[in-house]
View 1 (cartoon, rainbow, N blue to C red):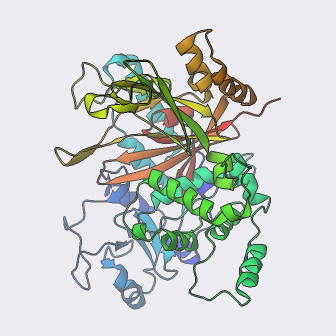
View 2: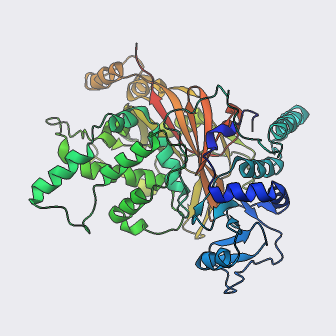
View 3: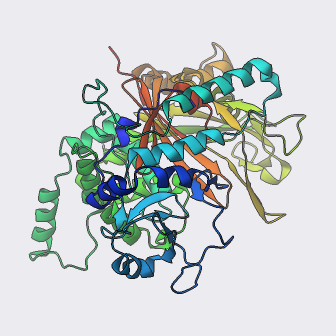
Length: 530
């Protein structure tokens, strides 16, 4: 983690009750909490070392999902007894969420944010950063890591005023950079929303009012010839538009996308729960919902089958699959639309199964994706020329690139035989600038046939000449922890600086911190052609 953390990006004004607490008690409570902070398996900071190994509510003696610790008297209570505690103990409004190590105001019944408290949490996280397990880096790598950690700690010394930008601070908040409150295991949603909020063509569509909520509401009323019933499903795209309006409003206070979550639940009832969901599945689900609502507003090109809704306009590309008969050489070609590329990590040849020190590269994963693959005997496909099922070779390539290219890294392995699942804790190296030319169908065909390009392949050459194959990364979604207990964090690249979006908290980090994370999804945008 680098030394360029800028706490000025997470400093909404504290509530009046928090201000009164700090005037009366200073920072002693924060300092004492640092000894109780611990890192959970999913990479989050929580409170530990309480008097009871299993903290329980002092009022009902139950181990509830959300427990709070009073900063004054160290009482513990559940969410059902919040008012009981501070109502009978004036001045005891400020508490800490035990599971999340977040400040909570009982009187406001909401999270509160304070840079000094965030500093205490960040210092603890930095102190518990794991040591590098890469033996090839040697002493120089370990010394550099230690130096970087000390450098950050010097900037985050817990003193009054630390983490508060000065009045003459020249650092500005990038437009649209706003924290999103966790509504109960919704980090999967927040991480994807942050990426989509800053996907240039997707962002421009909503900020330019291409989906007008008032017009949309009027159309619904005209279609029904009456006001829209209260219980009827709301327009999902309208709720997406509302998130954009809130994120780009200039308000620095973290936003709670509760209405958006409720709307998504309505359209995705099978995922409607407060359980942790997969960020990639949420991304696909969200694009599907937008497509369902928007497709009626856009006509398809005659005979092309292309959809011009905003979801497909920005994210949809076309894959080409060539299956060649191993006996006669006949090739069958199919084309399929896609909104992302799911890539396997490079195989670990000659390595132990539990050795996670190997580092894959994005280019290696793309090479693996487009490499010819011999299909097994149980995967024989019907050959139109031989008129029987034959052994064959399959090769994937990209016929058409999207405006925004999304990569999904397959980190979760599922064994049907053993009936087990696990996460692959392997690091991935990726470039900030990416040229996709080697993976286009035109390049794959040229490599396959050399200069012997057949006439029917000419359309691939025409398509490749119209595209810009150079991309720039702007968002990286990472996964921390295990398959059972994990946490999603997004890194955004804005104005050539990187920002870590961890739910409500946003901090500026260095390039090294991004590269050291366990990448799960990456978003690249096409470079503008001059």
